[in-house]
Amino acid sequence: MDRTAVRLLIRGRVQGVGYRWWARDEARRLGVDGWVRNLADGAVELLAAGPAAALAELEALCRRGPAPARVTAVERAPADAGQVARGFDARPTP
Image 1 (spheres, helix red, strand yellow):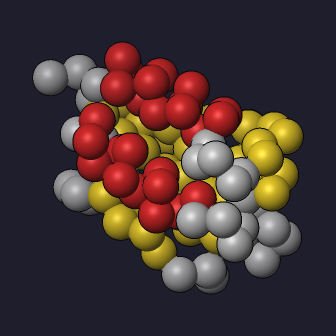
Image 2 (cartoon, helix red, strand yellow):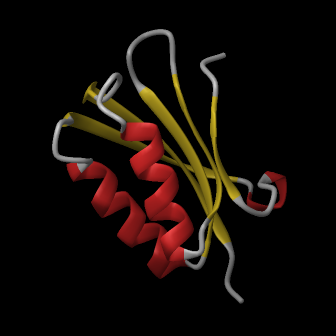
């Protein structure tokens, strides 16, 4: 299985609209591992690992977000797939 990883930083109206729970459900549906959390600056951070096609689909979904969200920007950076545990969880704000 080709397993790569990506870190997404999602900005806009993405807190207080169920974005983390929506992203968790979408990632699980796609069979992607990782986590999602709110950041103190109002952004959402997502770390995901899995097949490249599933990561591309997850990124495309994150650019839209759930209906109440208004995504204005998504920054993408590579990540180390070996550092991502199995399963996908919503984490608390650090």
